[in-house]
Length: 253
Image (tube, rainbow, N blue to C red; front, side, top):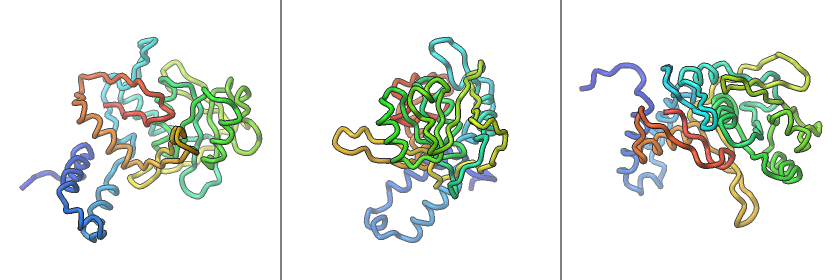
């Protein structure tokens, strides 16, 4: 019998749950078996926030390949735990934020910060203003976040929703500044298993773009599966080659 007490570490819980789930007969899954449904709910309820999954050590968790600067695991975790949007938003529940930034370390930190407490809709700056406005409307975003230089260029400040400027800091984190310069912060609790952390657009190559919601559980389970499939260890460095507006960012290992 195990002597473990307290919550089961999520890095072990999710792979164990997935292995058990694969072994269950498809007939039971299809019939919404009460025990299976309850097990799924319990695992999702036990899923930690993104910030809690990141360690508190001094190893590099995110590295800027161009400059060599880095953020430690502890610095990332502290930033995520303290990060809040500086104004209130009207949506009942988790505010939905369209984050429009160039691909790179700033976007990576922003994705992590917003998925911890909000629902992020990541978008690329490499598009025309008209298409961007259509995507923002279709996503039903409550607010828009972008670099100050892109707000005017991409015609984002059209008065239909709050627009926040991002100021990147020397330590690779950033500060969000609202047009009204208000310092009021609303304390939305960190996302848990069933909370929608990310909404992605499909590429639209076969028709109209579709919106794909990704819950915190989906995000963390997918990250753990990626770590295991490519056999990442604590001494490895993972090079991200994909645009962060189209695929969700792996969590620091």
